[in-house]
Image 1 (cartoon, rainbow, N blue to C red):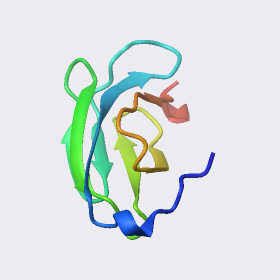
Image 2 (cartoon, rainbow, N blue to C red):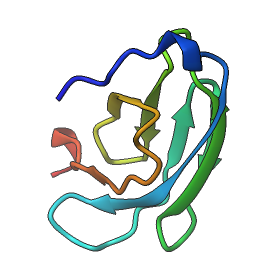
Image 3 (cartoon, rainbow, N blue to C red):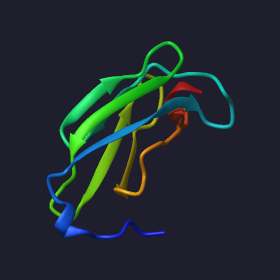
Length: 94
């Protein structure tokens, strides 16, 4: 489903937390989680927390980067506060 646009929420502080895992497993990935210009590094358990301002549409775009994995980029609205992110290994590493 498409994220809802809520411009009245623009600039509000928002927090997203969860874990970064290997696709189809519960194996943690050390990754950088970047959201609307703020970032955190997932720890050895894959856990991250990012605090950031919502964009002009009251939404956020989270980007996840980890060595050996394809980048993951998606947009959400403020109803999303907890998110486990599953990364696919990049093809050149298989």
